[in-house]
Image (cartoon, rainbow, N blue to C red; front, side):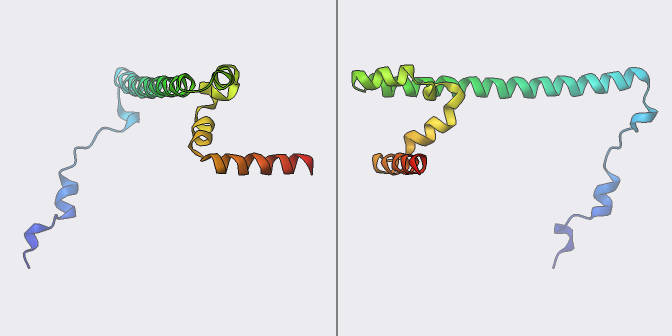
Length: 116
């Protein structure tokens, strides 16, 4: 067996570039490190916000398509119902994913629980 195909952990560890400890950094270097972390956090937040906004746009487009392909009373329902707003996006998508039979069973169960 050729042992050269495996990495030697001691050799790998000796090649790691060590950064100075935080306490030994100058005030300017500490501030730069903090600023770098803040910038990274801001970039991450912007990425999350952009993804969220894209998801809202996709959701609203889908709800509009469903509404446009529905009868008038259902269009009114989708437009007036708070359940079909982005605040309830995931619950709405879960509900829409159920078959009509599943929806009926869920609603029947809710009615039964309400009246008992």
